[in-house]
Length: 356
Image 1 (cartoon, rainbow, N blue to C red):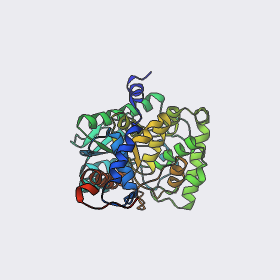
Image 2 (cartoon, rainbow, N blue to C red):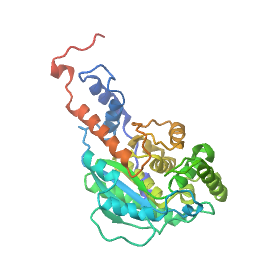
Image 3 (cartoon, rainbow, N blue to C red):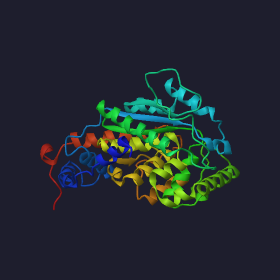
Protein backbone atom coordinates (compact mmCIF):
# COMPACT_ATOMS: atom_id res chain seq x y z
CA UNK A 1 0.00 0.00 0.00
CA UNK A 2 1.24 3.48 -0.85
CA UNK A 3 0.05 5.78 1.90
CA UNK A 4 0.20 9.13 0.03
CA UNK A 5 -1.37 7.87 -3.18
CA UNK A 6 -4.03 5.73 -1.52
CA UNK A 7 -4.92 8.47 0.95
CA UNK A 8 -5.33 10.98 -1.88
CA UNK A 9 -7.67 8.68 -3.81
CA UNK A 10 -9.72 8.01 -0.69
CA UNK A 11 -10.07 11.76 -0.04
CA UNK A 12 -11.54 12.65 -3.45
CA UNK A 13 -15.24 13.38 -2.95
CA UNK A 14 -17.94 14.00 -5.55
CA UNK A 15 -19.30 17.53 -5.68
CA UNK A 16 -22.67 18.08 -4.00
CA UNK A 17 -25.10 18.06 -6.90
CA UNK A 18 -27.92 19.31 -4.64
CA UNK A 19 -26.31 22.76 -4.92
CA UNK A 20 -26.78 22.81 -8.70
CA UNK A 21 -30.39 24.03 -8.59
CA UNK A 22 -29.48 27.09 -6.52
CA UNK A 23 -26.45 27.89 -8.67
CA UNK A 24 -28.42 27.52 -11.89
CA UNK A 25 -31.23 29.70 -10.52
CA UNK A 26 -28.72 32.47 -9.88
CA UNK A 27 -27.34 32.18 -13.41
CA UNK A 28 -30.85 32.22 -14.85
CA UNK A 29 -31.68 35.36 -12.88
CA UNK A 30 -28.83 37.39 -14.37
CA UNK A 31 -29.71 40.11 -16.90
CA UNK A 32 -29.56 37.99 -20.06
CA UNK A 33 -31.70 35.42 -21.83
CA UNK A 34 -31.38 32.12 -20.00
CA UNK A 35 -28.39 30.12 -21.20
CA UNK A 36 -27.20 32.87 -23.52
CA UNK A 37 -23.64 32.73 -22.20
CA UNK A 38 -23.52 29.05 -23.08
CA UNK A 39 -20.52 27.13 -21.82
CA UNK A 40 -19.34 30.06 -19.72
CA UNK A 41 -22.41 29.39 -17.59
CA UNK A 42 -21.54 25.67 -17.46
CA UNK A 43 -18.08 26.58 -16.23
CA UNK A 44 -19.45 28.97 -13.62
CA UNK A 45 -21.77 26.27 -12.30
CA UNK A 46 -18.93 23.75 -12.17
CA UNK A 47 -16.87 26.22 -10.12
CA UNK A 48 -19.88 26.84 -7.88
CA UNK A 49 -20.20 23.14 -7.12
CA UNK A 50 -16.45 22.69 -6.59
CA UNK A 51 -16.41 25.63 -4.19
CA UNK A 52 -19.46 24.37 -2.26
CA UNK A 53 -21.89 27.11 -3.21
CA UNK A 54 -19.74 30.04 -2.12
CA UNK A 55 -18.98 33.27 -3.97
CA UNK A 56 -16.60 32.18 -6.69
CA UNK A 57 -12.88 32.72 -6.15
CA UNK A 58 -10.24 31.88 -8.76
CA UNK A 59 -7.06 33.53 -7.47
CA UNK A 60 -4.32 32.59 -7.15
CA UNK A 61 -4.02 30.49 -10.31
CA UNK A 62 -0.96 28.34 -10.94
CA UNK A 63 0.45 26.40 -13.89
CA UNK A 64 2.91 23.57 -13.31
CA UNK A 65 4.98 22.74 -16.38
CA UNK A 66 6.42 19.29 -15.67
CA UNK A 67 9.40 17.97 -17.64
CA UNK A 68 10.80 14.51 -18.30
CA UNK A 69 12.72 12.54 -20.90
CA UNK A 70 11.80 9.32 -22.69
CA UNK A 71 13.79 6.23 -23.60
CA UNK A 72 11.56 5.69 -26.62
CA UNK A 73 13.27 8.71 -28.19
CA UNK A 74 15.93 6.20 -29.30
CA UNK A 75 13.36 4.82 -31.80
CA UNK A 76 13.46 8.04 -33.87
CA UNK A 77 9.94 9.18 -32.94
CA UNK A 78 10.85 12.89 -32.80
CA UNK A 79 12.58 15.30 -35.15
CA UNK A 80 14.23 16.94 -32.12
CA UNK A 81 17.10 15.51 -30.08
CA UNK A 82 16.53 14.64 -26.44
CA UNK A 83 18.73 17.55 -25.30
CA UNK A 84 15.93 19.96 -26.22
CA UNK A 85 13.97 18.96 -23.10
CA UNK A 86 16.73 20.30 -20.89
CA UNK A 87 17.25 23.35 -23.07
CA UNK A 88 13.55 24.21 -22.91
CA UNK A 89 13.51 23.91 -19.12
CA UNK A 90 16.22 26.56 -19.05
CA UNK A 91 14.18 28.64 -21.49
CA UNK A 92 11.18 28.45 -19.13
CA UNK A 93 13.38 29.61 -16.26
CA UNK A 94 14.58 32.54 -18.39
CA UNK A 95 10.96 33.56 -19.14
CA UNK A 96 11.47 32.89 -22.84
CA UNK A 97 8.74 30.38 -23.75
CA UNK A 98 5.12 30.59 -24.81
CA UNK A 99 3.87 29.46 -21.40
CA UNK A 100 5.84 32.23 -19.69
CA UNK A 101 4.13 34.88 -21.80
CA UNK A 102 0.63 33.44 -21.50
CA UNK A 103 0.84 32.72 -17.76
CA UNK A 104 1.99 36.28 -17.19
CA UNK A 105 -0.80 37.61 -19.41
CA UNK A 106 -3.56 35.73 -17.59
CA UNK A 107 -2.08 36.43 -14.16
CA UNK A 108 -1.13 32.85 -13.28
CA UNK A 109 1.89 31.74 -11.30
CA UNK A 110 4.26 29.43 -13.18
CA UNK A 111 6.48 26.72 -11.73
CA UNK A 112 8.70 24.35 -13.70
CA UNK A 113 9.15 20.83 -12.36
CA UNK A 114 11.94 18.39 -13.20
CA UNK A 115 10.25 15.02 -12.77
CA UNK A 116 12.61 13.06 -14.98
CA UNK A 117 15.00 15.02 -17.18
CA UNK A 118 18.29 13.56 -18.34
CA UNK A 119 21.50 15.27 -17.32
CA UNK A 120 21.55 15.59 -13.55
CA UNK A 121 20.34 18.49 -11.43
CA UNK A 122 19.85 22.06 -12.62
CA UNK A 123 21.13 25.17 -10.91
CA UNK A 124 18.70 26.32 -8.26
CA UNK A 125 16.01 28.77 -9.37
CA UNK A 126 12.98 30.16 -7.50
CA UNK A 127 10.58 28.93 -10.22
CA UNK A 128 12.15 25.44 -10.42
CA UNK A 129 11.08 22.41 -8.38
CA UNK A 130 13.75 19.71 -8.60
CA UNK A 131 12.12 16.36 -7.89
CA UNK A 132 13.77 14.05 -10.40
CA UNK A 133 12.51 10.47 -10.06
CA UNK A 134 14.97 9.16 -12.67
CA UNK A 135 16.94 10.48 -15.63
CA UNK A 136 14.28 9.62 -18.17
CA UNK A 137 12.25 6.48 -18.70
CA UNK A 138 13.22 3.19 -20.28
CA UNK A 139 12.21 2.43 -23.88
CA UNK A 140 8.52 1.47 -23.83
CA UNK A 141 8.93 -0.30 -27.19
CA UNK A 142 11.03 -2.92 -25.43
CA UNK A 143 9.27 -3.22 -22.07
CA UNK A 144 7.93 -1.10 -19.20
CA UNK A 145 8.87 2.58 -19.35
CA UNK A 146 8.92 2.79 -15.54
CA UNK A 147 8.97 0.45 -12.60
CA UNK A 148 5.81 0.51 -10.53
CA UNK A 149 7.81 2.18 -7.76
CA UNK A 150 8.97 4.97 -10.07
CA UNK A 151 5.42 5.53 -11.30
CA UNK A 152 4.08 5.78 -7.75
CA UNK A 153 6.88 8.17 -6.85
CA UNK A 154 5.93 10.38 -9.80
CA UNK A 155 2.24 10.19 -8.86
CA UNK A 156 3.12 11.22 -5.32
CA UNK A 157 5.15 14.11 -6.71
CA UNK A 158 2.10 15.37 -8.60
CA UNK A 159 -0.09 15.07 -5.50
CA UNK A 160 2.52 17.04 -3.54
CA UNK A 161 2.46 19.78 -6.20
CA UNK A 162 -1.30 20.13 -5.80
CA UNK A 163 -0.90 20.16 -2.01
CA UNK A 164 1.82 22.81 -2.19
CA UNK A 165 -0.47 24.97 -4.31
CA UNK A 166 -3.39 24.36 -1.93
CA UNK A 167 -1.28 25.47 1.02
CA UNK A 168 -0.55 28.67 -0.92
CA UNK A 169 -4.27 29.28 -1.45
CA UNK A 170 -4.30 28.35 -5.16
CA UNK A 171 -7.85 27.82 -6.44
CA UNK A 172 -7.17 26.93 -10.09
CA UNK A 173 -4.43 24.67 -11.45
CA UNK A 174 -3.12 24.33 -14.99
CA UNK A 175 -1.22 21.31 -16.29
CA UNK A 176 1.77 21.74 -18.60
CA UNK A 177 4.40 19.39 -19.99
CA UNK A 178 7.80 19.33 -21.61
CA UNK A 179 9.45 16.18 -22.90
CA UNK A 180 10.87 15.37 -26.30
CA UNK A 181 9.06 12.31 -27.74
CA UNK A 182 6.25 12.48 -25.17
CA UNK A 183 3.48 12.29 -27.77
CA UNK A 184 4.56 8.66 -28.23
CA UNK A 185 3.85 7.47 -24.66
CA UNK A 186 0.73 9.63 -24.62
CA UNK A 187 -0.59 7.93 -27.76
CA UNK A 188 0.28 4.53 -26.32
CA UNK A 189 -1.76 5.39 -23.20
CA UNK A 190 -4.77 6.44 -25.30
CA UNK A 191 -4.57 3.15 -27.20
CA UNK A 192 -4.20 1.05 -24.05
CA UNK A 193 -6.90 2.75 -21.96
CA UNK A 194 -9.45 3.30 -24.73
CA UNK A 195 -8.82 0.28 -26.94
CA UNK A 196 -7.81 2.39 -29.94
CA UNK A 197 -5.49 1.46 -32.78
CA UNK A 198 -2.13 3.24 -33.07
CA UNK A 199 -2.35 4.28 -36.73
CA UNK A 200 -5.34 6.70 -36.55
CA UNK A 201 -4.22 7.98 -33.14
CA UNK A 202 -0.62 8.77 -34.09
CA UNK A 203 0.29 12.27 -35.22
CA UNK A 204 3.37 14.25 -36.26
CA UNK A 205 4.24 15.56 -32.80
CA UNK A 206 6.96 18.13 -33.33
CA UNK A 207 6.94 17.74 -37.11
CA UNK A 208 7.34 14.17 -38.42
CA UNK A 209 6.55 13.58 -42.09
CA UNK A 210 4.16 10.86 -43.29
CA UNK A 211 6.78 8.11 -43.18
CA UNK A 212 7.89 9.27 -39.76
CA UNK A 213 4.32 9.11 -38.44
CA UNK A 214 3.92 5.57 -39.82
CA UNK A 215 7.17 4.52 -38.15
CA UNK A 216 6.06 6.11 -34.89
CA UNK A 217 2.75 4.21 -35.01
CA UNK A 218 4.71 1.00 -35.48
CA UNK A 219 6.82 1.83 -32.41
CA UNK A 220 3.64 2.36 -30.39
CA UNK A 221 2.28 -0.98 -31.64
CA UNK A 222 5.55 -2.61 -30.53
CA UNK A 223 5.17 -1.00 -27.13
CA UNK A 224 1.62 -2.27 -26.73
CA UNK A 225 2.81 -5.76 -27.65
CA UNK A 226 5.83 -5.62 -25.33
CA UNK A 227 3.55 -4.63 -22.46
CA UNK A 228 0.54 -6.68 -23.54
CA UNK A 229 0.04 -8.46 -20.22
CA UNK A 230 -0.41 -5.29 -18.19
CA UNK A 231 -2.48 -3.64 -20.96
CA UNK A 232 -4.86 -6.60 -20.97
CA UNK A 233 -5.08 -6.53 -17.17
CA UNK A 234 -6.75 -3.11 -17.28
CA UNK A 235 -4.79 -2.01 -14.20
CA UNK A 236 -4.73 1.79 -14.54
CA UNK A 237 -1.54 2.41 -12.57
CA UNK A 238 0.22 -0.57 -14.15
CA UNK A 239 -0.59 0.73 -17.64
CA UNK A 240 0.68 4.20 -16.71
CA UNK A 241 3.95 2.70 -15.47
CA UNK A 242 4.39 0.51 -18.56
CA UNK A 243 3.59 3.08 -21.24
CA UNK A 244 3.71 6.54 -19.68
CA UNK A 245 6.38 9.03 -18.74
CA UNK A 246 7.62 10.50 -15.49
CA UNK A 247 6.12 13.90 -16.32
CA UNK A 248 2.86 12.27 -17.45
CA UNK A 249 2.60 10.31 -14.18
CA UNK A 250 3.36 13.47 -12.20
CA UNK A 251 0.61 15.32 -14.08
CA UNK A 252 -1.74 12.42 -13.32
CA UNK A 253 -0.93 12.89 -9.64
CA UNK A 254 -1.42 16.66 -9.96
CA UNK A 255 -4.93 16.09 -11.36
CA UNK A 256 -5.77 13.61 -8.58
CA UNK A 257 -4.39 16.00 -5.97
CA UNK A 258 -6.31 18.91 -7.41
CA UNK A 259 -9.54 16.94 -7.19
CA UNK A 260 -8.73 15.97 -3.60
CA UNK A 261 -8.17 19.63 -2.73
CA UNK A 262 -11.29 20.86 -4.59
CA UNK A 263 -9.21 22.87 -7.04
CA UNK A 264 -10.40 23.35 -10.62
CA UNK A 265 -7.84 21.76 -12.95
CA UNK A 266 -7.43 23.20 -16.45
CA UNK A 267 -6.08 20.26 -18.44
CA UNK A 268 -3.83 21.30 -21.33
CA UNK A 269 -3.51 19.44 -24.65
CA UNK A 270 -2.50 16.03 -25.99
CA UNK A 271 -0.04 14.98 -23.27
CA UNK A 272 -1.98 16.47 -20.37
CA UNK A 273 -5.20 14.86 -21.59
CA UNK A 274 -3.42 11.48 -21.52
CA UNK A 275 -2.53 12.23 -17.90
CA UNK A 276 -6.17 13.16 -17.28
CA UNK A 277 -7.24 9.85 -18.85
CA UNK A 278 -4.96 7.96 -16.46
CA UNK A 279 -6.34 9.92 -13.50
CA UNK A 280 -9.92 9.30 -14.65
CA UNK A 281 -9.25 5.58 -14.96
CA UNK A 282 -7.77 5.58 -11.45
CA UNK A 283 -10.61 7.68 -9.98
CA UNK A 284 -13.57 8.63 -12.21
CA UNK A 285 -14.64 11.43 -9.84
CA UNK A 286 -11.80 13.64 -11.14
CA UNK A 287 -14.09 14.50 -14.08
CA UNK A 288 -16.05 16.82 -11.78
CA UNK A 289 -12.95 18.90 -11.03
CA UNK A 290 -11.41 19.19 -14.50
CA UNK A 291 -11.95 20.94 -17.79
CA UNK A 292 -10.28 20.04 -21.07
CA UNK A 293 -8.87 23.43 -21.97
CA UNK A 294 -8.53 23.12 -25.73
CA UNK A 295 -8.68 20.84 -28.74
CA UNK A 296 -5.13 19.86 -29.63
CA UNK A 297 -4.13 19.86 -33.28
CA UNK A 298 -2.58 16.40 -32.72
CA UNK A 299 -4.92 14.16 -34.74
CA UNK A 300 -5.71 11.62 -32.03
CA UNK A 301 -6.90 14.17 -29.48
CA UNK A 302 -10.36 14.62 -30.95
CA UNK A 303 -11.04 10.87 -30.95
CA UNK A 304 -9.78 10.52 -27.38
CA UNK A 305 -11.90 13.30 -25.90
CA UNK A 306 -14.93 12.04 -27.82
CA UNK A 307 -14.39 8.56 -26.39
CA UNK A 308 -14.33 10.09 -22.91
CA UNK A 309 -17.47 12.13 -23.71
CA UNK A 310 -15.65 15.40 -23.08
CA UNK A 311 -15.72 18.69 -24.98
CA UNK A 312 -12.74 21.06 -25.03
CA UNK A 313 -13.46 24.71 -24.31
CA UNK A 314 -11.21 26.23 -26.98
CA UNK A 315 -10.12 25.24 -30.47
CA UNK A 316 -7.15 27.37 -31.44
CA UNK A 317 -5.04 24.92 -33.43
CA UNK A 318 -2.51 24.64 -30.59
CA UNK A 319 0.01 21.80 -30.47
CA UNK A 320 2.72 23.31 -28.30
CA UNK A 321 2.02 21.86 -24.86
CA UNK A 322 3.83 23.57 -21.96
CA UNK A 323 0.44 24.50 -20.46
CA UNK A 324 -0.29 27.15 -23.10
CA UNK A 325 -3.85 25.96 -23.74
CA UNK A 326 -4.52 25.70 -20.00
CA UNK A 327 -3.38 29.29 -19.54
CA UNK A 328 -5.74 30.45 -22.28
CA UNK A 329 -8.62 28.57 -20.65
CA UNK A 330 -7.90 30.48 -17.45
CA UNK A 331 -9.22 33.59 -19.21
CA UNK A 332 -12.55 31.76 -19.50
CA UNK A 333 -12.37 30.70 -15.84
CA UNK A 334 -11.94 34.35 -14.85
CA UNK A 335 -14.82 35.36 -17.10
CA UNK A 336 -17.13 32.66 -15.72
CA UNK A 337 -16.41 33.61 -12.12
CA UNK A 338 -16.85 37.33 -12.75
CA UNK A 339 -20.14 36.78 -14.59
CA UNK A 340 -21.46 34.73 -11.67
CA UNK A 341 -20.24 37.18 -9.02
CA UNK A 342 -20.62 40.60 -10.61
CA UNK A 343 -23.38 40.59 -13.22
CA UNK A 344 -26.64 42.23 -12.13
CA UNK A 345 -29.81 40.25 -11.60
CA UNK A 346 -33.07 41.38 -13.19
CA UNK A 347 -34.25 42.70 -9.81
CA UNK A 348 -30.98 44.55 -9.16
CA UNK A 349 -31.06 46.29 -12.53
CA UNK A 350 -34.78 46.94 -12.72
CA UNK A 351 -34.97 45.03 -15.98
CA UNK A 352 -38.19 43.23 -16.87
CA UNK A 353 -37.84 39.47 -17.22
CA UNK A 354 -39.06 37.47 -20.20
CA UNK A 355 -42.69 36.45 -20.24
CA UNK A 356 -43.30 32.99 -18.93
